[in-house]
Image 1 (cartoon, rainbow, N blue to C red):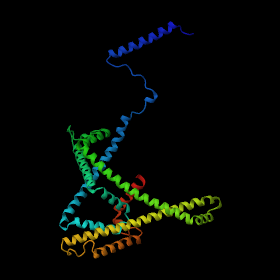
Image 2 (cartoon, rainbow, N blue to C red; image 1 turned 90 degrees about the horizontal axis):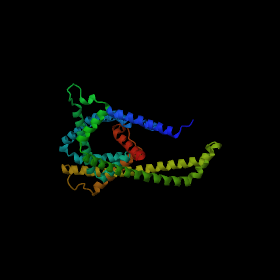
Image 3 (cartoon, rainbow, N blue to C red; image 1 turned 30 degrees about the horizontal axis):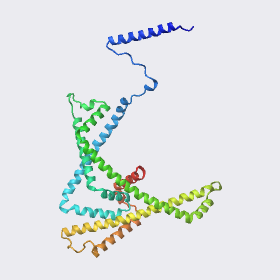
Image 4 (spheres, helix red, strand yellow; image 1 turned 135 degrees about the vertical axis):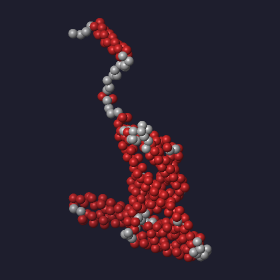
Length: 358
């Protein structure tokens, strides 16, 4: 039976009065009216409560890694500095370029990417890179020292460090706060920007060289396919079963592309090896000559740069170094491959960054 209009009005008025009485009772008790029920879309996970618990252990792990690595790096730097000071009477600043030149003569073609990266960084400016790196290192050392001091605090004197009594999320927040107070953000930002700019310049230079090699490889592949494509396609059709004859042109094209890129890469590596040998010979002859003249082992003018003797020695070193690299296929023989394994790892990382991530 349908309700009359007066009955509907009375029922609505009763509902309003009941809601008003409930609101007044809640206010008299010092509380607040109950919130309206949330919709299904609003009853989700509170990310502000979940993310700190998830990121806390990660930040603490990263901090532990940095704290564990920092002493080893600091010790290595100190040992290197002490060795440099001990060798100061022998003028290592003059022998170091000569030693680098000797390495370039015989290993430049093996570490093409590393040599190109160093050349690009030198073009960008070593002083700026060194200043930015030193600023970041000083900031990291100050942050680690501040975190260690804070980790040793025991304000309540209960025998347990204050940070050990916190949850992972609270510990990470405290570490971030301590680091933020211990460093100069302007200096850190400027140093990071300088290193990032130098890194982008180096990556751009390396990618341009790789792009030239790939372009040359594509052109060589087109010529090989144009000259030998029909013969290779016919040979592939004879080898493949009849049901796969339609794949013969594709296989031929892929083979020509592979040969072209391989040949271009070897040509680029040979050119880089020749340049590295020439650059290394220049550094070696110049460094040893300056060192010998300074310490009286050689008379001035006997083998000056531009003299016939200096040019002859330089040319002999270039031929010897480039030929040695070509004979070895740009690979290091044993035990040099083990001794220079860290350098090989750096070369592989640079190739990965430039070819994959760049």
